[in-house]
Image 1 (cartoon, one colour):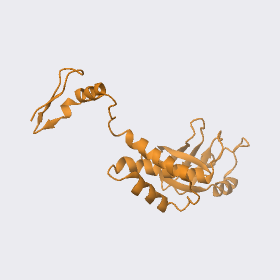
Image 2: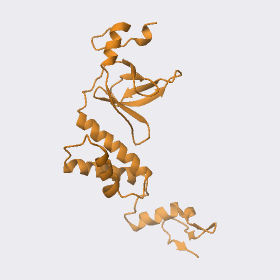
Image 3: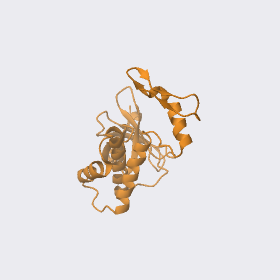
Image 4: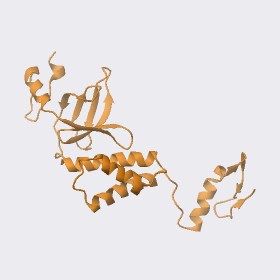
Length: 200
């Protein structure tokens, strides 16, 4: 009965249900957000966790985002209460400002890939900075980091711009079936090196 609620702490042994209640009360879920892939992330006691799996009893298991760390946290289905934490962190705690910046970057990347018509500098970044009161002391380098993250996220979606005539021909040859008008192709090429012919 008690094993389900036991948590293994850093000093290396499990403790009972009564003491565990006070330990779990100290666990602080400071933020829940979605990463750029749309998966839930949670900040628990200055450590960032990502959604790992959902159990049959609808509880959710989160895992530390550090690849070398194997700590898992079991949360209720509404993501408001921590049921248990298993393992010991191998990485250092994150500063709250760092977590906030990482959260903003994740939100910006997700919005940048879903709202392709919105300009990153004018609307996305400024709007997100207004909606995040925790970012008080923001520097110019932070804004540059946000901008770079947004452009890199969008660059993965759009086609690569050719840097030479050979690359342009190769790209046209590769995508010539996509040049369609009235259900008829209007781009003809024999090989990558040949001149593309466009018809009406």
